[in-house]
Length: 312
Ligand code: RIB
Image (cartoon, rainbow, N blue to C red):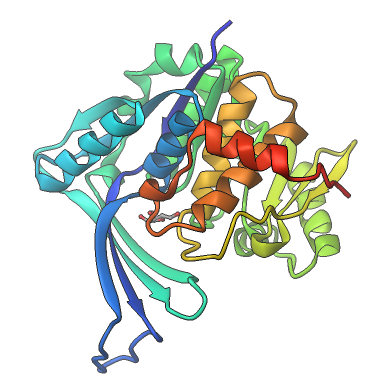
């Protein structure tokens, strides 16, 4: 049986500025540090899933420029198979990432460049790959129409489908109905459902609304409170794992999604896969950067072995 994971999404170069606070309009402030590295939610999730032992194919678009070289080198190191449409008429995108020095929390602006031009034709050209996948994952940084078409192909082929609805956007009910798993964080869950998500009880209510909109199961990631899984039959809260001091939370959601997909593709049940995703994220936040912070399979397994199987 196929264990292939196919991910559709965006690569961008992350330009990360660490500072005490964000500047106000018209103001210049001194930052504490700067780092340039590989990012983009789809690419980060691909790296996380491959580092966690998955056989990962990543569908995207790149320009023909030094950031595209960075993308290819990143995937080669992690063992991700690229499925790239080269787009000489555009550029490989970038993200501005503000990291608050005291907390490691972030705010992001992303300009996807070439990946913002991923089309339905790009997806249909990989229909066989998507249709034969064990697990298909996408997010919302590339055009919605491409994500929707890929979910249709994946569902028709029998793949388990995961939509990480980031950044938050209005999603057509027909598209939600194609998703076995939807994985928003608190603010994305609020954006999609219109319900507040400030507690585990509220997360459960928002998850219930997502189910009423046709998704198979909702997994709401809750930052330092772990994640809530709800599929209509079972509701399980997986508390956060402690893997060390938090350095940077950027990419934690990508670590979760990549780890979750890798575990599902290996045949784990969804709750075990959520635990695996949470452990992947817990390690990633102890390191700087996004793709470079993703742990190996051995590191995640070691953390899971040390952690009690606390579920509530
Ligand atoms: O989820 C983190 C990612 O979001 C960053 O790597 C940035 O590129 C944006 O896409």
